[in-house]
Length: 568
Image (cartoon, rainbow, N blue to C red; front, side, top):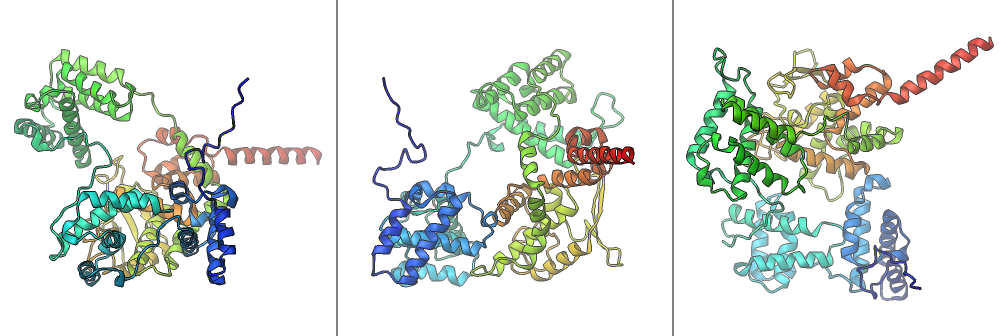
């Protein structure tokens, strides 16, 4: 009989002689050369990390590769400690690993740099550029210690830096630090005239499907632009055309989808030169070929992208007045790839929302914007990072009272969208052209939010944008509003850092309706107006069941009242 030995999969790939945190504690306690206060701090750092991970000291290996993904998931807010306290714990634990010669000591003094690198570093410091200093600091010291001259830096050195990070980094993402360093190096070449001319390669994280427009025939691009113009401003008197004008956002999406689908056809082996017009990609054989190419990446299973693409092809068949046979075949392809209608929120959103709706977590979300705005990060945080924190706090405060979509939040214009009638009130106004369902929205902001906006506008320049920038959440150069995806990522990271909770910008809409229906069960029309849905049936389909808790309590109270009445 063969007996299987129980294997700890968490430790299975580690070398057998990997020391544990408990071994480091013994090493520190036995080493009398270590300053007692320093010894205490290093042991404290190891102990705090063990508590955060939820393992005893003897079960935590001194392996950066093992520690990094686990520490990256730790949110100080969830541990009810400050970010500074957590950073100190990480630093002290790393110092303990340096003392045991498990990881390398980080050089951090300018005197460690040779003359060439010190000159470049002085240029970075003198530029006062908030991007270059944090991204390039470790990379420059690494290159200096490796004996690489500034003019000799190559992609091989950047890759070596990445490998060194993997070996030595215990909390941050080595890939992110490496990519930031390469980005910072190339950016310095643009902003500092004395910087070496070498440009480093930054590999894409994802495979790019959409080809550049220059890779497609000019006639195809011209036909595409002509079609988009007709869809944006159709001839309403022509019975043969699509009469409903498409909004600019819809036109942008259509154009992007069509270019991507044409690229899919090219990736399938069709020469780009054969795509001379929109009609070419609507030919049933071509359409099927492009859709098969898309399905090849999803194990032949339709997803939202293939479904939407097939539906767009069907629509374009009618809009371009293809022959009836072609339209019928495009209809058939769309039918085959159609997904079942969604009923309510996704399971992932329901699971996340369930966690957010506890009393403790709801309190964290409701109070976080005010707390963060009034007390932004201190310690080594500079004015720029504090202004970023206040900007995030303001965005979350608006989402709590005005659960708009992230695109509308990011695009708030100080004069166009924030209306001030002159009596101290401020309204957030979104027109029908700016919202998804063509239903205008208007929110009267609370005095707390108004004060937050006014205080932020007084202090954000020149830390976040030039004076006079007309957007509430601007790009750093002030030339336009912030990219919605960038703002969404920032808010998600900020919430996790401050509270330990997983919450994205769109969940603010679900969060708002959940609390509304909990307080007023059945108020779906009120929820519809709050979110700007076009039809109350959509609101009911999305949120039916969220008020179950209140309904059950109301029924329990009813039963209790009935029983009391009968006893009387």
